[in-house]
Structures are given as C-alpha cells and as structure tokens.
Length: 252
Ligand code: XBP
Ligand code: MG
Image (cartoon, rainbow, N blue to C red; front, top):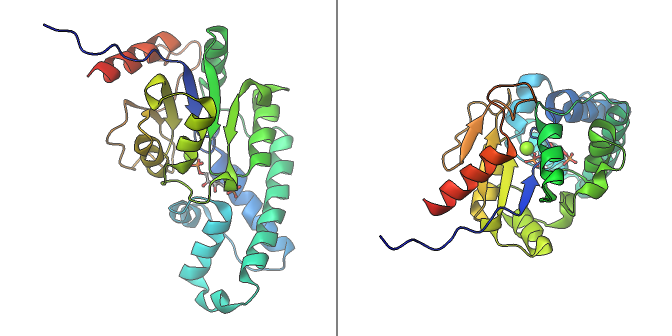
C-alpha cells in the first residue's frame, strides 16, 4: 500500500479560556455581570439557569444585548445603547478582574499539568478566546503562575476580531500569528460554539465538558472528556496521548 502524506507533527496547543482553563462562567463572569448591574442601579439578575441560556451568545457586550432583546426589548430603542452597554461591560470587567485576582477561580483538573508538559517538550502555546484580554491575563497570573501570560506566544482575545465564536475568525487570527497550518496544532474547547469555531478553522479539537456544556453537540471533536486529568488520574490526557490522537486523526 502506498503511504499517505506524512501528518504535520504537533507544534502548538491552542486553548480556549472560559470553561476550558477554568470554570469561569457561573462563579466568575455571572457574578461580575450581576455586580455591575447592581452598581449601575439596575434590578437585573442573571441566575444560574438564565446565565446558561444567555451563554448561547458569546461575548459579554453581545450577551447583554441578547438579554435586552429577550427581556427588555424597549431598551433597545435607547439612542445611547451602544455606549451604555460598553460602560456596563467595562464595569463588569473591573468586577471580574477583582474577583479572579483574589485567586477564587482555580484551573480545571489537568490544565496546569498539561501546560507544564507541553512547555517542557518545547511545544508552542496560544490562546483563542472571546473574553476580554485583561480577563485572560488575570486568570493566567492568579490561577496558573506569576508570569504565565508570557508562556503564551499568541493571545487572541475579545474584540481583536469582530466576529466572535462560533465564527472561526479568532482561530484563523491565532494561526496566522503563529504562522502555522491548522494541521500542526490542537485546540482545546468546552462548548459547542467554541468547537464550531475551532473546527471551522480546520483544527483538531479536544473538548472538556462542564456543567453548562455537557449536553452540547460535540460531533467532530477528536476527544470529548470530563477533564484533562490531574497527575494522579489514571485516564489523564498526557502529551504522549495527545500526540497519538493528533497523528491518528491527521492520518485518518
Ligand atoms: C467566552 C465568552 C465570554 C465570557 C465573558 O466564550 O463568551 O463572553 O463569557 O467575557 P469562549 P467578556 O470560552 O468560547 O471564549 O464579558 O469579557 O466577553
Ligand atoms: Mg469556552
């Protein structure tokens, strides 16, 4: 049998942030949105199930607008709507940064372990997320390690591309910055919107689910796991296992 073209070796790992590096949504972003609403004198409150429904729309500003469309459509007529949403979102970011800076959001199992393995093996690291850049930095510095932001060669975040996930733009931007083909990378995601964004950029993608995403459709992922697994977990996703998964799926 004539062998097919050699698979591109794995050169970089690209991580989503919210829900993938840490469970930031329910006990982080949601709390920060509610605190910003309180500070602005608004009686809006996003409880856990409502927030789960609002997560259908990625991006905090976009999510506030989606909420207004569903629950306060008359407010959409406000001529200053864009700037009001922007101001509210700025306050929300301040609340979130403050909350995460106090170390209240631990990384998910296996994240720090896998990142350490990848760094030791000389793999390149990148981030592709919808959240605001300050939020990424504070999570990496407070929950991973001081200086950890510099471990990530490319950080694609927030409004750097106008079309947020499930659009693939953020992944395409990160691949362009890395100057790597999608076939040389693996992406890590937790949600259907994130998976669609990564697959649309041609990336093989490992999904780790969480309470908000466990029922999402993950067709096309190379693996769907509860988490990456800490060092002592028998089923942990090691770098060796990831390389095998990447090579097998690339050839298949
Ligand atoms: C994350 C998001 C973000 C966060 C909130 O999606 O959609 O909007 O929920 O952060 P993903 P901001 O994990 O797919 O990147 O308020 O800063 O947008
Ligand atoms: Mg996510």
